[in-house]
Image (cartoon, rainbow, N blue to C red; front, side, top):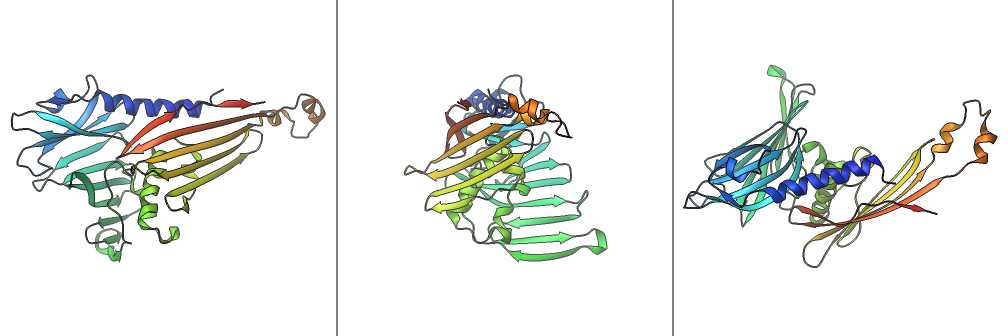
Length: 325
């Protein structure tokens, strides 16, 4: 038996992979480069600063954006596919590239928007700044400058606005595709409640949050705010134990390990106990004896393995669930 939640996770991962594979290798326009019959937004500009216009495409389905394609421009007028990334976002984003080659991604959400600014350097797209705007309901915004290490929080509206500048901790290079583009999932970067994290742990956290963001691992890891712990150099883990009366016990352990080739393995081991029989007990316990005659817990276990390589999550072991006798 595979729970519906797992099927949804598998489907989401499959959509990401399909879109990434369907990017055209080259073309003279965004329409020629994007997969057929898929909605997209795009921006043109010289992001690699070689004097030739480049192209960025974000693909979407009816609910969410699932991937980005980065194309480099050629002197013959064609764009060539450079890299693709699976990146779940809202269904309403904006893309632009300014005259300095900075890629601007705006993710519009219910309470405002998130802005992420990336610059191409040494063959990689690096986060250099951004803004977390929450002026629809929460009435604040935070501007981030990852080059200077400063963040400015502004509270209030109009004449009542007040701003405060703070130092951010020392961070590693935040590469595109290594973390979700949603500031509410990036609190580990600046929130002192997480303590002082070393650079390798910050990178591992980005991968962990990315897995949550794509709904690839057990969803409770996300909203329960489970913390990632460093077990030893190059290895991190997070465990969620979720108990729900009359339904199930669920234990999920995620382990992230940095491999010698610079990639990361992500393993999730799950144990699930179906306690559906308990729901048949009357509130006054009058039928307890009758139900207990057929009492039987069904136990399931599941193990999944992924490899994270330069912003791409590749499934290595199928998401299957096995009933334990």
